[in-house]
Length: 214
Image 1 (cartoon, rainbow, N blue to C red):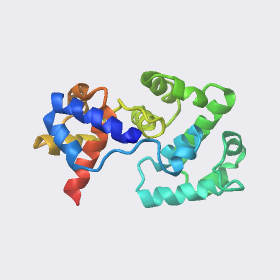
Image 2: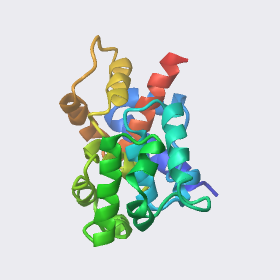
Image 3: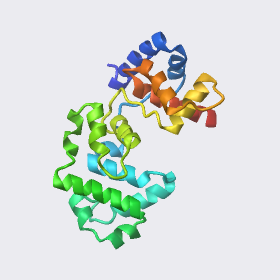
Image 4: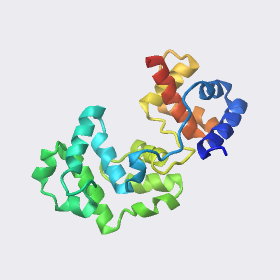
């Protein structure tokens, strides 16, 4: 029996063959998109996923992983701090784990909103895409890009593409043989034809960049 991911890929491919044969060719050639969410993060709470997203912002993977490991070890057991545990931790311990003042302020804002009930993370799966984005960008340090990536990789939404992502812009430049990267607006306009499979298109554009680098 075909997996959910393979069924979605087949439907997306049929759509791209009608509206964008170049994208269809890339989908056929490159690694297939998995059925998100996958891996250890699929088992983490929405709070932990978002806290991790804040820690990893603007950091190289190895450095971010080290800081996240220290942060996760601040409370007993294998689970990273809950919102209540985080708010109870002294600032010195959090800073000692490697969190910058800005990231510490962002994670604490996230936790405070969860504890006070302003941020209903358990309800996100029942919201539409724009509602999720509007809900999350209330938090300091969470912008549209972080919210869109959360939709893709944590909630497994199939029609999301963050146009401000430089990797996607570079992927479109390579795919179309352009001299310069398209603007976020140009990418968003192009992506309209890929709906309702924009997540598959985004995954493919990232793989286009990987293909050139390797």
